[in-house]
Image (cartoon, rainbow, N blue to C red):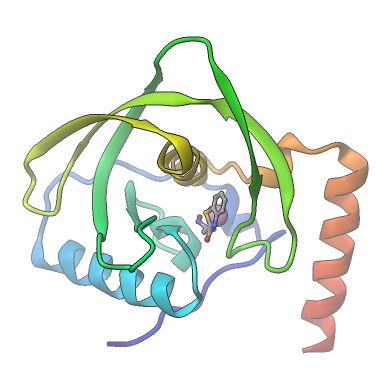
Length: 167
Ligand code: GNR
Ligand code: NI
């Protein structure tokens, strides 16, 4: 299966708000599977469709050690559960090479459709909660660097722009 090119910060196309998916078609399932291949190859634990220039509400993830628990979530909705927050060192395939600590709600209720257009709902915690929130931010045009200071974000932007010029 083809690997998909991943857009990189500060590409403006990462700032678009993804639209809901009206119908879960074979084309959506094919895209989701290509995204999973691309995510595993990177390697990464999550990928949002907007990162491969498809501004639709589709995310894939797999936080398992063995990389054998792929999840496909369509039109995901999140709500924090409780007041507990947790910190993770986050990275992003669209911000390659940079890792910074981000604080988020520790638990979230997730409501979405799966690849068969069936409703799924569960409470996510730990790394899964962080990853799902990171992916849903992408669907709103938001990146983990937006949680950093302007100084840190600008440093990252300049370094990536330099890399992009040199390659
Ligand atoms: O591969 C990824 N690792 C990661 C680590 C901590 C918090 C979030 C992530 S998601 C990231 C892949 C990615 O960019 N998804 O959008
Ligand atoms: Ni990301």
